[in-house]
Length: 163
Ligand code: AMP
Image 1 (cartoon, rainbow, N blue to C red):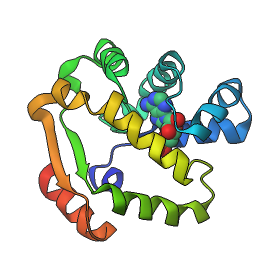
Image 2 (cartoon, rainbow, N blue to C red):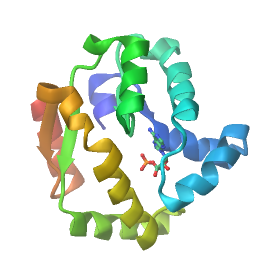
Image 3 (cartoon, rainbow, N blue to C red):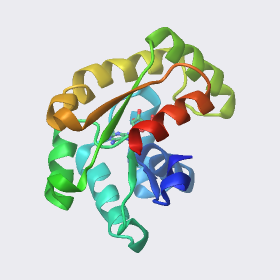
């Protein structure tokens, strides 16, 4: 929805990795079992994938990164690739964990192999250990957005802060 509103591409590493798994590429074969347990796919693989995507012409006028960077090494690689000033803002969606589990379990019907309770718990752990420290890296560019409520409610808040 935001990609449409801003007219910039949505670049989701999770979507790209799931596509690689579905296509049975070398990357997909390496990533599949790691994604299934909720760990992070190795940085070198993900960074190469993102760098290639950012080099596409449609990313020249801006982009929304979704699910990347996920740790300090990836943030450093992004910095090296595009420079610090290329990242305007980081949206931090604030939702309590119980509600997240409920949403993700509800989504299991959509066929995501990693929306099982054990994997969800591991993904929260990885978030706290590896991803949360990035809040310091991006400092005052971090924009908290209330993530509770309907998709439309949350999107309205996103548009407010982005504008
Ligand atoms: P997501 O769709 O963003 O929730 O990602 C689903 C899974 O893909 C994660 O649990 C990781 O296993 C993998 N993944 C997605 N993005 C990254 C990333 N930036 N670095 C490493 N692994 C990732």
